[in-house]
Amino acid sequence: MLELILIGIAAACVAGFALMGPVSPPPVSDKVANYTPPAPTQEPPAPKVVVFGDSFGQGAGASDRTMGWIGRLQRNQGWNLTNLSRGGTGYKSNVMKLAAAQESCRLDRCLNYVETIPEARTVGPDVVLVTGGRNDAKVGPETETAAIERFFETLRKTFPRAKIIATNPLWDSRPRPDSIDRMAATIREAAQAAGGTYVDIGQPLASHPELIGPDGIHPTDAGHDVIFVAMLEKMKSAGIAAAR
Image (cartoon, rainbow, N blue to C red):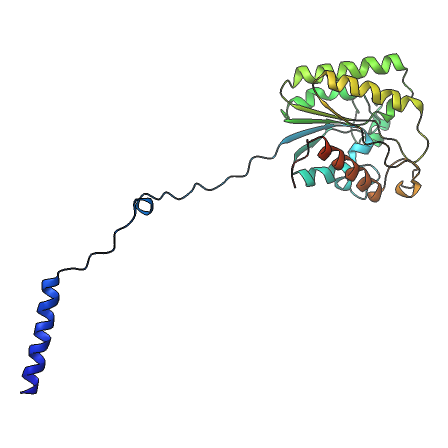
C-alpha cells in the first residue's frame, strides 16, 4: 500500500513539472546581447631615426659602441635607429684616405654630413638627429658657416616632413677652442631656419678628465652616460622626448 502511495506522489510531481513547461533563462540586456569585444591594441611602430655625427656619436671610447650616448638614447626612446655617425667627420671635414678612414670610421671613406645624406635617404627617417662638429674646429669660420647652412638646407629639402633635432658640438675635458661656440651659434640658426629644434646640452665633459678614456679625447662608458643624461633632460624640456 505504501509503495502505491509513493508511486502516486511521484507521478503527481512529474505531471506538475510537465504542466509548468520548460524554464526560460532570464532575459539578456541589449548591452550584453550586442557586446563586441574591443579590438586588440597595437603598439605604434618605432620611429625611424637617423643620426649624423662624429666619433662621439659613433660611440668611440665606450666599452661597446652600443654603450655610447646615442645607443643609450636609442634604447631609452625605443628608436628604430640608423646611426650614420663617422669618426673624423663633420659638416665640412671628411676622411678620404683609406688607412685613415679605416682607423677613424672603419670604412674605406668617411664622408662629411652633406655627403652622407643620400645614405640617409634610403631609410626615410621620421626623425633626424644631428650632433658633432668638433672635427671642424680648425676650419675657417666662413667656410664652416657655409657648410653648416648648406647641410641643413639640403637636409630639409631631402626630408620635408622629418623632425630635425640638432645639438651643439661636444668637446672633451680640456678647454674648448672659441670656434666650438661659434659653430654652436651657426648650427642653432641654421637648424631653426630649417624648421628644426636646437638642443644645447652644454659641455658635460668639461673639467672632468675622469670621464675621458686613455686617448685623452673620447668619453668612457661613464662619460657617454653623462652625455646621454644631459641630452635626455634637454629633450624632455623641449617636449621632444617620448614619455618613458
